[in-house]
Length: 441
Image 1 (spheres, rainbow, N blue to C red):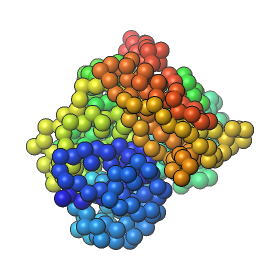
Image 2 (tube, rainbow, N blue to C red):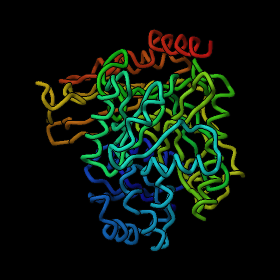
Image 3 (cartoon, helix red, strand yellow):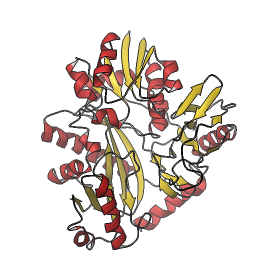
């Protein structure tokens, strides 16, 4: 029996748990969650509800259950050093150490790493610990992106033209960020289309999974505030409609070089997921950011398609033998749509904003995958919290069919819910295609 520890409690971890349990090996899954996820709990032998900062309690749970290795789902336990702690206990992890997780937790670290090792993909950028010098730097840029240098749950990026307009507004927003964070990064704004490339890495070998496009904006037509992600899609040909073959190859090449650079810089091998958020521009592929774990929702697009045994992949990541594996995915299209409370992502002063404990009824969802995120299962049914509730995933031979499956399932869920019906539709896809045609000239 192989005994696996999973840390995390979201829909991303629900699909990881499902993929682990799909293994041909005899698996016993043990899960550490900061709040109970009924989907993960139903797949687990035992569950510990715990803060991700409580490494001692997590370590004791792992030892008592004799786990062979751990899979770290979210960024918070990576940032708290759980991989380092478990390593001292003799338990290896699929996930980087705290030092290597800086690839996500410190945007300055990542930008400087690319700059030092002359890796393609960086914008013009500078990090500021005060407002001094910002006005002069942004004066030389056509457009600006600003972000705190730290974890923001995928919601910290602010873009000129969307969140602010003028130079004075840029400086004002930088000042607000510096009130809560020690530094702010100011970058050149890229024009193009974004894609997510989640790669498996054993420190030497990097293997790409099918590219996915995420949708951060809260409302239809890419309007409204950024969220943790309202949904995503992938294509049956393992590309995206606006990408060329060389775009994906370029993203993979950047990630391969980053894996080599991070080893040269730290002396450690990166073992886990290197998830690059890339953008295709007129001048090629550029890096927006790295995450040190699977994406949420993007994990729900690619893990259900995985044909290779995921437990074998995890062992190869830990052992440094990914080069010996033939990792395959089904040739299927996927569409993931999150159902959320109606007040999700709205500003605090909005009448519909705020936490909720509304009951929802889920029925007639046969043929689609449901992955629980922030829900509370009680004796009288399922309740939403204030965040994303359930990821609904349609999987089919074509994108149209996958989208119809996901949308049909959502229409059968009763309660005060909202979602983005446009994700995976022809209208939105054609908008992306046309945008890239204009950019490529």
